[in-house]
Amino acid sequence: MAVSVPKRLRLLAEEAPPPSLEGTTDKLMSLPKEILDIILARVPFERLVRFCCLSRAWRRSWESVPKLRVELPPRRSSARVLWRCAAPVRSFGSRFGHLLGTTTSRWLRALARKRVEELTLQFEELAWFLPKPAVVLGPAFFSCDALVHLHLKNCRMPPAQPGFPGFPKLASLTLSDVALLFKCGAVQLQHLIAAAPDLAVLKLKDVIARPSAEHDAIEEWVIRAPKLRNLSIDIFSLYRDNGCRIAQELRLLEEASISIDCLVGTQDFLDIFRGIAAINTLWFDAEATMCTVNPLEDITWRFENLRKASLRVTFCRLPSFMAIVSLLRCAPHIEDLNIKTRDTKWSPNEVEIDEDFLNSEIQDDLISGLKCVSLSGAKYLSNQMCFMKFILSKAGSLQSFVVTFHYPERDIWYKKACKELAECQIASPQAIVRQNFTDDWIYPFADSTIDVSATDDDP
Image (cartoon, rainbow, N blue to C red; front, side, top):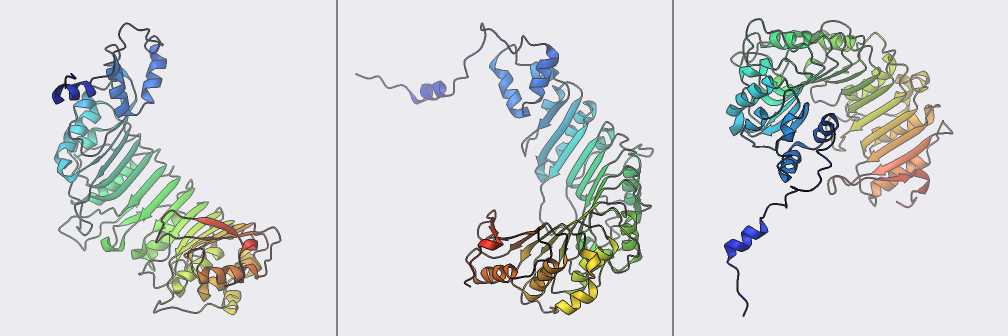
């Protein structure tokens, strides 16, 4: 007769810990400490802690590993694990729920003691329509003076104590949905950037720097970073002007991403573009609804180093489209041009762009150096088709032309577009023309490539 085992004993047996490695030859622990530290430092943090529980000899070995990278899952509320780490901690990253905002002070105090070099803090949004983030960082944030990389998202920065020296070792700074809602908040942000002489990467998205009680007040602040190589400024129009300016030309700047439609048509906008004149890669948003004038029309200088440009435009709105023309005029050495669009056929302000208009606005010498051109989000619309045919027929140095249509493969408009482009006269004999289709409203990651020579001529 079989004897049934009580459920409690069965569960204990199933959850029994892994067998101990005591008494066996421990080849890992016999390695030199320097090599062992390198191995353990490369294991993901959560796995490392569980891994070291396999043996009593390993149990506390992770605590003495220098330069650990601590990545914790969201909603972790205890900072005790940091106090057990050896100093310094190389990097710390976590996503916090808004209910854990009051616990960040404990984290920051521990991180400051451990000389953290890379800090990534992301906080959940309460609601997208709220005018400001809810979580306020504790004053211990300013004690992390060993920071080299700082990334903050959806939080509020408190005022620093007088005499705050900044983060002098900072090499990259990313602020996304960060607010400094106190008097002289703009001055503090300006100082934070200027106090880092080796700052190479600066990314600012929807940064608010003004007192919360003075919604219309604008405190201008300037970016002073002589060694900056990568700059991104994105100001959502809901927040209006946040006062960000560029004091002088950033001569070492290589890449820039600019989306500041609230300043289009102003001298401040032109000053920002004059400050980034040394770039070789540009991403610019000319699609914004506030873009009622050509944003690049008044640029009188040249971007001599610019080789690659990515623009977001609307072909049916003339001011947005003319940004392409103006960029080609002021950047005569562009070789790689990427264009993204989200045109709709039913736009109330649609304008017609024909071949005569393009010939009058875009001289052959403006596109003679183009080697790679891509257009994504395209549709079978007259303005877009006219522009694509113009580029194919005029760019004599073209090597690659790729267009991604916002249609499924079997759509009649996709087939018609492919047929017209296949029949188009191509000025460059070495050009490779490829047409893609996308089902991103059904399958977000679907993307296929079809050679123009293999398309079906039957619509």
